[in-house]
Image (cartoon, rainbow, N blue to C red; front, top):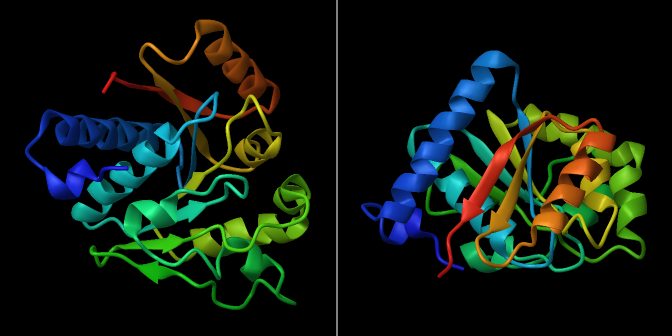
Length: 207
């Protein structure tokens, strides 16, 4: 998983992420946006890739960002930033109170911190649905200008739809030549049923 926004900031790909950052800024002018879900219809690392690079571009202009890996099935953000996997979100939520400080890991950017998924819960959807998760979202929102959440694919698990209903906005990530049109449409339908605020669709080109 390449963080082109760090390794190749003058590339077309890095500029595309900066354009995405600009579009998010316009969305923030229309309605408050403190929490954002980045998710894909089908299994891939595409959502994690977009989230990680978007987080970098936001931090590069001084926005305080927390990237949260809420994919308890196939977490990937710890690999992108080369940090330990545990403890993380699930471990924090298992504590007696989420009023305690989460284990936020620093990155190469002072304004970007990472909360990994941590130990895998027995039933991830139950943890995502819990009141404790709602409290955690509120707590994290107090600690940053924008909190970006990664989640498992919409086609396989209910986790993402549950999370989408609790956050301020959603970016749907599709891959050119890989994501089927019907799969993308089903994902949009799922998000609509969750009454999620879908800000747009991010299309990744074929590598």
